[in-house]
Image 1 (cartoon, rainbow over the protein chains, first blue to last red):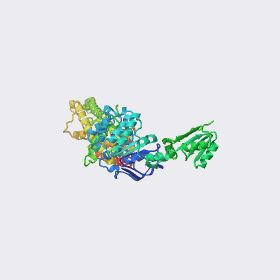
Image 2: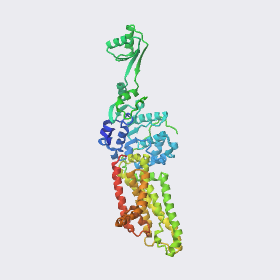
Image 3: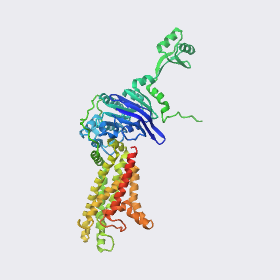
Image 4: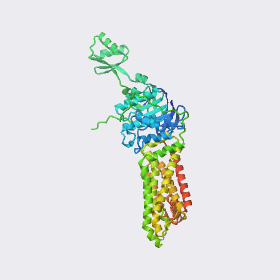
Amino acid sequence: MIVASGLTKRYGDRVAVDAVSFAVRPGRVTGFLGPNGAGKSTTMRMVVGLDRPTAGTVTVDGARYADAPAPLRAVGALLEARALHPGRTARAHLRWLAASNGIPAARVEEVLGLVGLEAVAGQRVGRFSLGMGQRLGIAAALLGDPPVVVLDEPVNGLDPEGIRWVRSLARDLAAEGRTVLVSSHLMAEMALTADHLVVVGRGRVLADCPTADFIAAHAASFVRVRTPEPGVLAGLLRARGADVTRDGDELRVQGADTVAVGELAAGAGLVLHELGLVRSSLEDAFMTLTAGDVEYAARPAEVTR
Amino acid sequence: MTAPTPTAPVPTAPRTAAAPRAGLGRAVHAEWLKLWSVRSTGWSLAAMVVVGAGLTTLICALVADELSTGETGEPVGAFVTWGLLFAQVTAVVLGALTVTSEYGTGMIRATLSATPRRGTVLAAKSVVLAGTLFVTGVVTAVLGWLGGNPFLDAEGLGLSLGDDGLLRALVGSGLYMAGLGLFAMAVGLLLRSTAATVSVVLALVFVVGNLVVLLPGAWGEWLTKLMPGNAGGRITAVESFNPLLLGPWTGFAVFAAEVAVLLGLAAVAFARRDA
């Protein structure tokens, strides 16, 4: 289990992580979701002791990472795809990592097979594609057979087949009872992989709940209905207690389902041109939640004459 | 590249009852594997041997005749390890690369994830680097002596192992290379850039070390004695071209102290900074 409490990281005046507290429990995949620059990577780097927290603590199974007798056996982390020397072979990279934590060399061959890199293990990693580098990073994370696995944006640079592989790997690791924390800036990806979500924006935790709850709470839906007499229908719906907004001949209704709207219109003898349920996407829900918390937002270009 | 099937179970490594500690021994083993799994190491060390021993042999062949006349006023003992003056560049490069290549590639994050204690990482790197450079430095000096001495012998000027200062110079060549490598590594930890580190150390040793003598009076004299390359380099030569320098062991003690101070500063910076 990973426990962060009051975890804070400041770079000069900029607060990258702002008093974040959360717990990542074993046996399920926890998604660490947030826009770029939200503080996900910084938090993960503090988990494995690469960055020193300005305030607060983060522990792995009750201990600081640096105090683990063999850290790679306690936590496996994929932090940056390219924490590699380009001139070293994949096998040599894993060999020195294994030696540093007293992991038998036979385990190197095992993880190379696990990530599908046996055939290129003798090649220097400078020639690896982004996806191959990512697989090697995952192999390094699994080297010590750790009970806690931390993967920062693991699907970056992978092809669709590789993305599916990472998803099932994360799920398999969790099913074995391990603690699995996977970060992403893609809501759709997290919806497919994570059982639980910790959503961050601008260094703060915005939500910490099961993925299903998050979707139910934030993926709002409404009924869209078009009619030649929108004013009349809007009046009837409001009388029934529904929320209605009007846009030309189109009404957006919340608080009544398609059946209720249809029956109401039929009862009043109103003609309908369109009636349907519109579910906003998860991506929209995520955007809505983090709208104020995106650090680098693109603005529509202003037209100048 | 083939991908494994998604359903494949994750094989697990045998768990040992008491996980062994990621101590200095393991860190040294890891650094040793790292050092020899990149090509730059072999090239740097080969360059040291070829340049060092080769130039020594060459200079001895060229000057033996002139030295035998006794008109040059140059000490014979300054030539039997002469190539080391140039070979030391490779020690600087290798020492710098030991840390700067890790910062340049992002490898340092893997290193510190595997061995979170920065003091242990620094100690392991120091042991491996210094040991490797010591051995290569001695081999270079010995090969240079073996190559160059016959030319001196032919003129009756040769030096044998029993002669005053030769053994000290051969072993001292290893000591100086090791010290210079550590010096460059410490600067590398502070600057975290290969180009900057190599430039600064080479400038200190080759340029500043030879220019400070131009400073007026005692200032110039003492700075010349104390500059790292001058203080430490003296031990590599049986006799020196420059009579101003400190004695071999005194100079090396000064140099060792300079290296120790710089390593101390580097250790503090390394421990404090985020990776």
